[in-house]
Length: 150
Image (tube, rainbow, N blue to C red):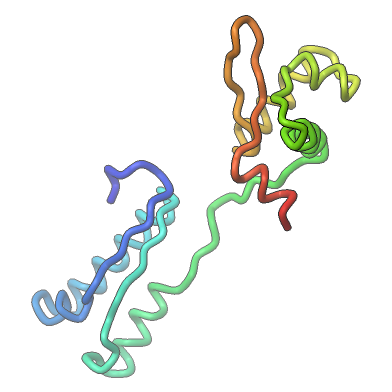
């Protein structure tokens, strides 16, 4: 799991089989480790277990370790970044991909400020910056589209 790239989904089927083969303590240590790695790497882990194979106390300890976790840091969209994302969204509806210069002119920003705010939106995963000749164009990502679909 540690070798996988970030943000993958992993399905562990039949944890009860691992408990019968390696004992409850070994399986619980595996679940602890899976939880830790999933938290650090941004993975989603789904664990399948037959609850009839465990007593209530052991089942509660497994449920406690496999409860839902919130991401480490949920990057909030700043108002400056929202302006950039909104402009790129409006232009993408029209079928165009705006350049950094167009974004700066439309929002009344200087070149360095437009670059900085665009770079912040790219780091947040809301837009993608790609070269097109001597210019750089901005495209909306799925995360950027989800801002406007809510």
